[in-house]
Image (cartoon, rainbow, N blue to C red; front, side):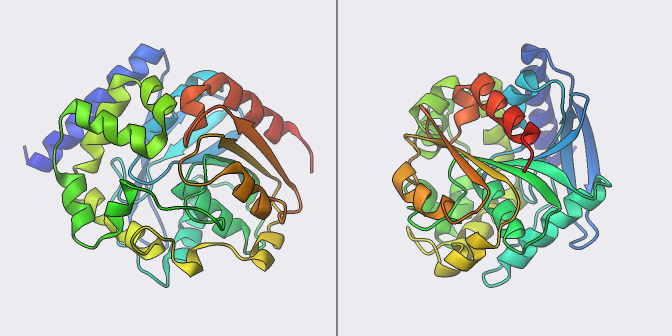
Length: 309
């Protein structure tokens, strides 16, 4: 067995423990995307209308596990973004990363044979979804963005330790280097927030740590961070401008933490107001509110999906 296969087995083992502890049954599937040719993995749970879940940078589909428990009446399709979890790697390129992201969203909906579907997204996944919606497309029928959507909104700060991933070469080394569980917990506390770190199940932390060490994942994450950011500052082309925000016709709900380390509520509100059919909810959380209050976020998601535009 190769080192790569052994690492993948350890990731799946940690996921099985996580899902068993939560009492949820999860289906795993692989899909080859038509545009890029990469294979992506999905973790699906529940029964009912389909909803696509897109996670943030350096995370994986398993990070949505608390919502699997809280939203049993929806068919949740949590996607490992390219170069995350157990999906194939992808090199993201400055100048074309928006097109890559929009094509990825199209590919996911095609793979699921969905003409349109709601999307729940976090951080990098939220930025990908907003970039797609800003084209005027309605294939995302409703959008719930939980946590600041990476650097899609003006005023976002690229804080440490994520800023280190923007440095070519250094980001990949950091991600691939094994670190003690306590050190990784401190990293998550800085990246996601104190409350999120405290609420994170031990098995989920293990999944995320192991996933980041896959060689292809480390290269992919480093490439996307460099494509969207300078060191500690977003690239100008990453943020949606006023006309792009106004072009978003998809009903969009933002669920943002009052302690999000990357974007304040006040700055977020300036951009969100420019989206005609948008709603902002504040929570006592950091960058990943559903980890702190999965039931509360689930209620907001249910309301957003039920509300007619």
